[in-house]
Image 1 (tube, rainbow, N blue to C red):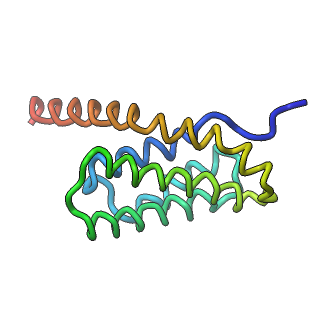
Image 2 (spheres, helix red, strand yellow):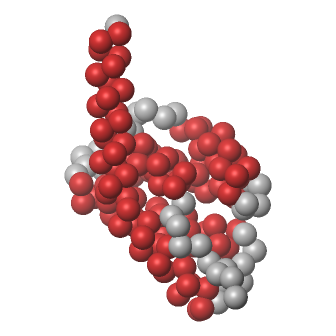
Length: 140
């Protein structure tokens, strides 16, 4: 019998979320539309689901950033964790899956793995950002 639930985290969304949380002013608010559309083309979800969910994530993170301009590691992880959990379950609902108790329990490993993977991705994104900034200083 084949597995019906993914265990791998939604890496595109996690990288998008990491960039947005680590560098809030880097992406404009509308960037969720083209990036979500690109994710929809390759994820197998119905077209428009990631487009909607990534856009709503950008709006929610912008509201949180406006309300709480100070940030720390734990607040970032908590905020990203909530976004990840909501994204995975909303993607399940948008895909047309019947949200039974079994489906929710079956999605928990993916949710847990995604939330635990976020700090590693955030550290990698911070390293990439430092590399990007150091290269721009050398060139300019």
